[in-house]
Length: 367
Image 1 (cartoon, rainbow, N blue to C red):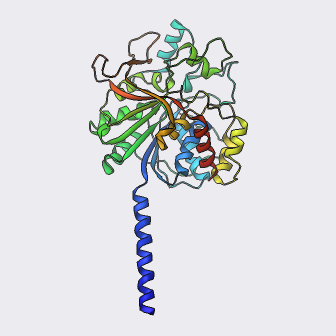
Image 2 (cartoon, rainbow, N blue to C red):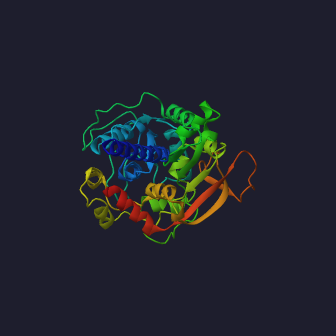
Image 3 (cartoon, rainbow, N blue to C red):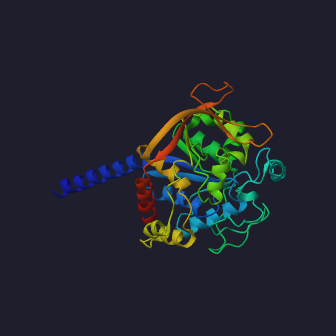
């Protein structure tokens, strides 16, 4: 009897081990490519880290809302504070491939100032509605209230990190690109087989359904209303956006800002998302501020559960590279009806179930 019980216990242990191994093997692999400057850029990363069905292979950093060195430091420190310093962080491009701040100033001098231009903002004008970090030079990493990180950055460039991970797990890796597309463009130019190894690329940005222009507008809504197809994730580095929109991805999804327009992280939502007092909730309570739309959080939610999307279409897409007022603007055609210069048909998310997005946001950050 003792031998029989020992055998049964061993069998149970073996079955549990096998189930645990199978569950681990089924976790969805993702790389987060992000301009991780402030709360709205860091919260979606935490959502992914908190989901037990997701394996975050690493975080790659690109300039956009801020400069990559500061964003890298903020990401490393965040991971330390929430107990996840095991996640690799690889710094990517500080500057766009071709575009520069000087070129952008010249365009503004000719065609009028842009309400929001990310790291190129030299001061925060009166219409700014949120507390923002002080602007500074690209190579400056100012002291952070949460402290400076001690964890080291991955020695590889962001592009090389993505190439390495997709070679290790071909056809298994989703990339969630929630900032400008420079790192992805560099990876594709370094390795022509990169895009075809990615299971799906999900990016974020662009307004195709502009808001009413006779309503009060903050800096973000102002940009969308006056230049609806000029999203910072595309006009920051138009040449990189062109490379990405014309690369042979197996699946390409764009979650537009239209989808998250009604999803505002108000004070009551942030209070709900941080009520558990656990490490992630404590961190978010310290760095979050009400008023930001849930742009990237919506993109994360759509990837986690595609049924959250309530309105979508397919469009052929590219980016305008002609010098002028529309340099960096998104171009669209009916599927397959573009100029046939390599543009891809893209699944475009225009609307989501806002209650389900917010519920997922609250649930994951509280874990």
